[in-house]
Image (cartoon, rainbow, N blue to C red):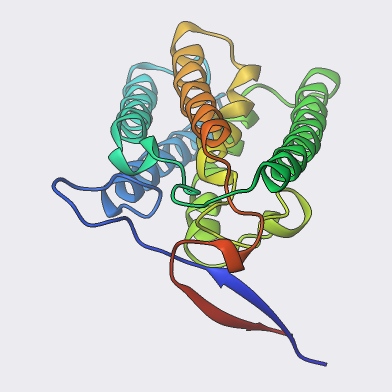
Amino acid sequence: MTAYETVCRTKSAPGPGVAMNLNSPVRLTLRLAASALVFACAARALYRGVGILPADAAGGRMLAAAWLLLLADLLAALVDRTRWQSPGGGTAYTAERLARVRREERRILAWALVIWAAILTGGLLTLRLTPLTGDWALIAVAALIPAEAVFSRWRCPFSRWLTHSPCCRICRLRDWGEAMVLSPLCALPSPLTFALIALSLAVLVRGELIRRAQPCPPDCGSCPGPCVRRERR
């Protein structure tokens, strides 16, 4: 039997300036370049028979360039004018429905945090209890960057079992993506990694505060943006 799911997709509202959201080609270029630099540094270290960290002068320059690119990406996310507005803006609620939506939002938030914490804890324990080194945290970040780009543009496997969002536009991962991708850097504590994690958490907290002020509609029927039918088998 063919099942149909309504998926809401909307582009950034027109206006002056350039929207630096997840679909921005500028941000995509920054992220993929950073990922490529990390993989190049890893390949170079493998060829030389040494670890990625501590890097030699050339490897250090490559990792520094990757850090600067990720920093620029996060700053672009912070100044993106489209992400200072709730994706649920313009949705009208009765008091009863607003309370129901807020309860559902809290449930989804708690569930997502538990899963995220479990995955992150499992990864950190794996690095601590096995011969694997912290280099693998960098590899994980470099691999997650293109994966997130694919998810945000085509099909995200998390919308069903993690955020339970029927709509790409209102999905919580819109504000969580940066923090989730960079969270493996917890295995490499340093002022540089903490700076990236702190900025990604600032994006996350901003999104949650905006979402708290104006909750998102729980279904596509209430979505103020345009919708299209996507057939799923």
